[in-house]
Image (cartoon, rainbow, N blue to C red):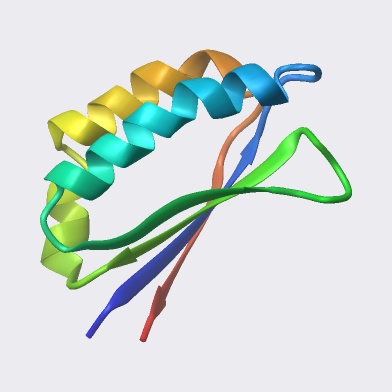
Length: 95
């Protein structure tokens, strides 16, 4: 059973371009290195340039759990942490 995850990310005003530039290589690292990653993409709201959502798809719950402590996930945190303006909101789904 595949696992889907959405993570809503509020970012600081005026930081959209820099946020996307910083996030790109880190997201690519997750896709390349983390086993079971089927999707790991970032989308910006058309209504609010400070709102993003990360959409993830994992082959299994085990793959998602391994990702949470992976070097690639650590790289994501380092790359985007300084841009985050509030607590992320996560939702997990099964497919």
